[in-house]
Image (cartoon, rainbow, N blue to C red; front, top):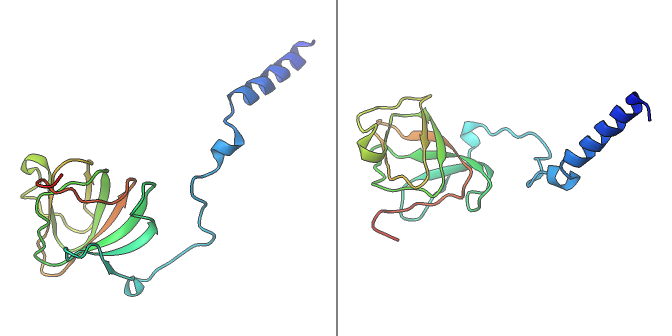
Length: 155
């Protein structure tokens, strides 16, 4: 076997040996079939849970299962969540209002977050969210894990 043919054969063998199977390259969720735009005035808001005044506007994904979702969250003026946690990490960007996100040990309790501010909240860490503006606070949230709320006095 010539050196060139050996290299070509060895390269093809390495490619086949170390390439993932085609089934592993299939996405878990098929991509959307078309692009989507939603005007702010057309956002469909729904109450997050019956006992909280938080409204959500779903953007993509399913917040009830693991796998990732994006949503807008609207907190009424004066809202105070009380101490709570979530199972998974979340990433939040404030788009409207003034938000205070108090992390573990009181971190951030005196920091007024303005539109464009970012928060990454680690799953399982207790925190408090407050809307301290005269109007509602609107946040964009992204989370990989399903949405839940863990209260400190409930197990």
